[in-house]
Image (cartoon, rainbow, N blue to C red; front, side, top):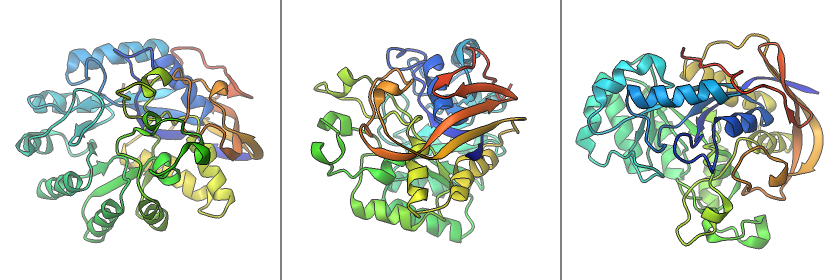
Length: 355
């Protein structure tokens, strides 16, 4: 039996408010516990987006009522809310800036709008960038200009990891995360290879990449600070539609996929602990969770099946994959919250770590 600390996922789309047919605080935090996560950070690109005190209060009230694991919520950067967002920093997971195409209403296309956020958001709280390639490089430049830390979400491309590596070598205050789907799924995958049955089910942002990109990520594990799921659930009906929204569910598949890779010698269990607990805890200033741990049967071999999952969306891009390592028990603050496939935590047991 393998014992891990309670894992941290700093990148989760809970979909509440506005899209609870996909997911909500109950189902997302149940999925988190089933995946070994005891803390999640929720993204602000909801309907309405979370960008001021009223919308933050709205979503935190829902979380307080329904969440089964601990949580915090990002505030989204908009064109006119820099001072408001800065005042909310102590209550938020951090500031999320969408600099590239994304699902939802938050996007900062005009680079001149970035200055106010980089200048006003308190340096002791994290700014996280949804950015790709050139906008990522521009975001790192802004962080250097304003001498503040910045965290890059869902790194996926060879050129991006090379920029991050160069920035770190020069002492810039930049950290980054990678989602498991960008480590394991190529853009060219067809139905027979991995069970992704339609082009819509391959839609994700950032897009799936080439084998060369994936190989570069694996070769630069020392540059990657965190694994984050970017859990972004949509229903199968939506994914198979004429206009499929981008995003994959990932809370319940991340750990078994990574444990399988560890069993194959691609990295170690200690690397998983570093990137799913130690580093995110430090980057996002997360307090200790007393009497909290995850138990894993590291020898359990099984097939990933969506029908066994807690996420409301009802599918996974990893359907049918053979993995090794199953979460059997999760203890949060001394209480069994998940055991042998059953979520035991009551709704509302989760705590706001910023409260």
